[in-house]
Image (cartoon, rainbow, N blue to C red):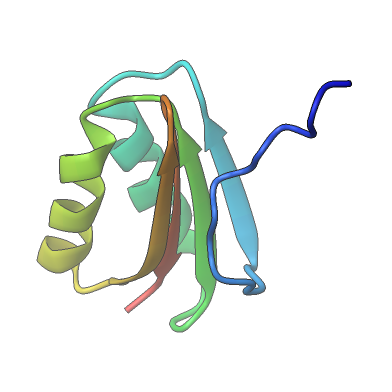
Length: 87
């Protein structure tokens, strides 16, 4: 009997919008996140899902430079999930 597929652990949290950037490579996941965050209200939370290995470095750097808060992140295999609060 197969066990259920494990999902990346991320704190239970609500988010206001989501981007599935799976299959997109640097810099597209961050560019899409930047564009979406600009349209969101301050304090709103964006959930970003990506398979780009560079996102592990790019997303935290983008958040620090743009004044957004990286609330949480999880990684399982090639999938990364990031929760970003708009600054």
